[in-house]
Length: 107
Length: 107
Image 1: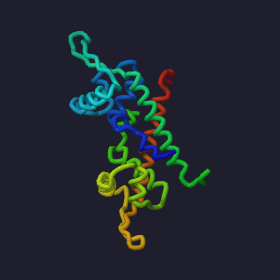
Image 2: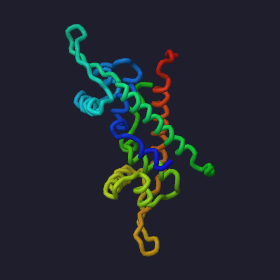
Image 3: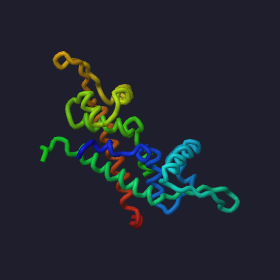
Image 4: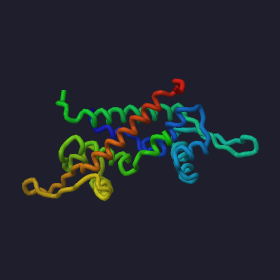
């Protein structure tokens, strides 16, 4: 360990709403905009902004289309997004482990 | 579960640098400003801003004093800060568990 676990966290991934987007997209092959909005309890504008940040970083791909006559936006994790989420989880586990081992003598 | 784990995360606590401050302060009874700065790899100005947010939320207390002739700032977790960190950890574990159980059938 050369630094604290949070030094290895990427703000693009760690930010609360974006972490939610990546987590939900990880659970399904692709996920619809309205589903994200409801589950993450954010406004459409706020969600759009976070999706743009993730898309610009190459972590998600966004697909626009129709379900019947209704315009729909679908979000999928890219391979890079999957790796970034895995790395975030790895660092969070390290952090949790440090918090929970306070009080035990150093090995 | 009525919402996604990130819905229960508090941005005050979850933000990367602030999560680092709370984690380090949790490890020691009190921690010095310079130690936080080095470990979290942030500028003094950036660290000061995050400390102000945490202090305003009642999660840390800040004490100013001297070590010999040198001015020092010490940071301690409040009881409320300890509870907030514990809640963050609880929600992160829930989130990690959801990410890692993708693919298993719902119970």
